[in-house]
Image (cartoon, helix red, strand yellow):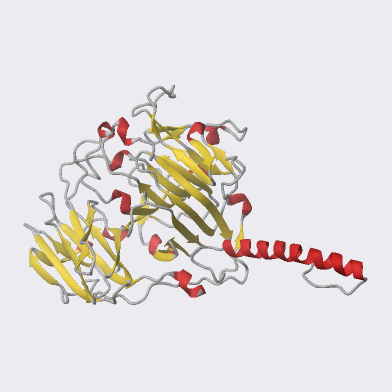
Length: 488
């Protein structure tokens, strides 16, 4: 009923007057709901977003499965979606429930479970949901808290035949292997694009096309946070709590080659996944213990929402502000950097695979540690009480193995580490460890103190005795903005 007063008989007027508040209240409630169901980073709705009900769930009705295939449950949709395969774990429907308006995926050390052939070492059960519908370009958003366990909780999507995997995040709740020595696991957000399709790539070598390891300003197990990705034909933007933390363009991705093919493989429709898995590259499975899977080993999801951009919707948030780092590309010199020990300019194009995995067209990078320890720092000007993002492309070229030790791989012949970080900004000293022998993007977010007007960015191979040769390129520090403030 429209929210107007109709002039009629006295009785009619009374009836209409009594009904008006109800109709207006319903209309207002629906309007409020539409406002609430906008993307977290676009409260002004500049994208003219259209919610996709078949790919969205508030998890309030107590029944999981309306929009989802539940791994391990026979729903008549074919063997792929009944598959119970998980990495070092088994998907079972009993691990999934709704409670108090939350989806809960519980991971358990479950020695009494009757595991399928090939599973049960370690004896871990967990759960996975897969959307029944497909998404091709749109805005994916989840509000969740990661469980305190060695499991990796993930919000991701993949096409048929495993083509075009897009990881909005993979979060490990708790580091467990002392030899890995990586205490910041629960503060790390890993974003990735992969391609596992044999039809596209016959090689079983490295299929990780692009990855960003981002150090968050909080522990992912401590509370609910909102993670999102705006996926278009030309770019994907990653958001955390209404802040843009990374933009990957199709052009940038396609500069990274694998068997001659570009990395932008996210160009087909995909199903959305919410799951937990146990990654052996995060540590040795033999180091796992039952007590690591306690009552807090639960991935809790408040909602999942997906939108399509409207016909007139704008592509807002073109990028970050100016780079505060001087000479972050090291094009011709080390100007602007204070160095100690073994630090030099290196022509990285001499590396055999530079043309297929380069951070820029400039062949020069800063090299640290050729023949011994080295460090490089730069102090930049900042604004008090402001969030910033430090980003760099890093590589340890002499490493001949991957992340080790792992119970599934042999010990590498050479395993080097390098570090980037920020200090003297009004908060605790922050570091990010790296260990790959190809250029990979890493980032750290930090918030300046109330009276701090400077911060020091550093790179070194001296944090522990396992340091080695390190190459650095594409260094930047930019100011981060809470995009929700645009609506105020």
